[in-house]
Amino acid sequence: MNPVVSQPTYGTAGATVSDWQTGVFDCFDNLGVCLCGFFFPLCLSCQIASDMNEFCLCGASVAMRTLYRTRYGIPGSICGDFMMLGCCPLCTLCQLKRDIEKRKAMNTL
Image 1 (tube, rainbow, N blue to C red):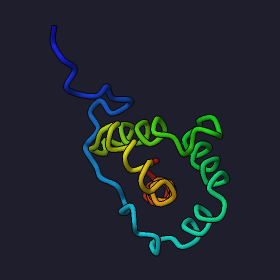
Image 2 (cartoon, rainbow, N blue to C red):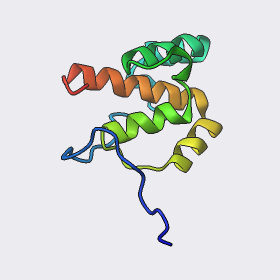
Image 3 (cartoon, rainbow, N blue to C red):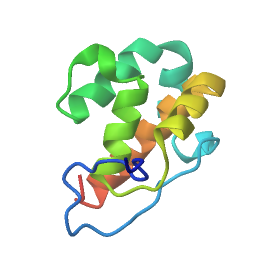
Image 4 (cartoon, rainbow, N blue to C red):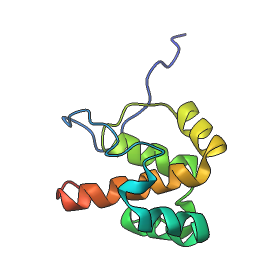
């Protein structure tokens, strides 16, 4: 029996590996997103889900972050996504939204 050593990918066939456009704690890269995430995290979650054509309440989930990472070839793991959302949920949520906005601006979303 062979152990699974890599995650399945979604839409990344032939895609290049990229990285997050901003760090988890780069709140000042987009202060509006940071404030929205701090005061209205459910609204920001719904915006993220909408940007990804997913169901509204999935925006702040491990599955959503993992889906986004695999979609854009961002290195990481489900365990890492779980830890980030468990330790710094609002900062992680804001990072995801900032990344979406930057990829939209670059026309890569």
